[in-house]
Image (cartoon, rainbow, N blue to C red; front, side, top):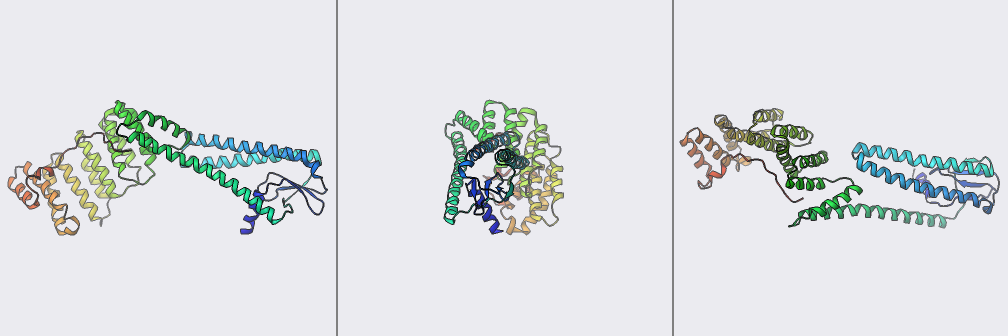
Length: 406
């Protein structure tokens, strides 16, 4: 296998197009890349006589190279702007391979006609010119130099994308953001490179500032679509919170919930991440007075858990009790607190930091049911400074646009 690869490499690196062997045969190189890349005549054709045919061969090679460059660039931009996806990439590669070899096949047929017109029929053989090892090494060096230059050109092209994206971020993150320059550079970037989410985040924020909430929503959906196959990170919580806010502004609260459900279910998330997304949606639903399905959502999440997943069950119940409090269902909230607080006390190594907060929340629920003694007992047991206790009361957080550095 190693010898075969070396042989193929030598064939590709060899720039010769014609030779006469020791048996008096003349061999013209055809357009095959690997084996069967020689057209052999059982006669000796002087190099001077073959010159005009080789000139035609060189012209064909130049045209083929130009053809390869043009269709590669055209295909790249079609892929970039019309079929940018993993499936699109596979299609791009398949079409590229077909066009590449179709070009060589066409060049082969043209060259075949030229040879037959000038010298008649030939037999196909391998193109193995009798050259010294030194010459072979020289050809390899030249070929590797060309490969290196092409690689450097590609690296420079890719590196420019990082420079461009970094400049876009810089323009948008300055103390006095230059959104016009960021948009101008974004336009250049999207013409040359695959789209990146930060461009649409910046555009969404610009649209938000200008009050075009529908356009901002569309840009945020593009961001979420682009990030849906990536690892879920902290930034995604802000994306979904902002999406809810923008859709509420443009299409109403219920539509916001529907679209949130549609896109959040596409994500590959852990149970804690799913719990936090549900918190964001539930808080939005309660603040928007469409809390009909909040509790059933928590029940569904609890049902989906493994029966031994006690830690996630604990925190989901904490959130459910919190939402029940916000919905004014204080008795139901207290019932949950009455089950999770003793459990937390039994497992202080895991939940010691959560106990004071839960006691304070239960205390406020009791206070709303006019159980002042029970409320004060919970506040005292929590060991929270009574001047600070008000900070622990569950509160509705109204949706708003969250802006962070891009």
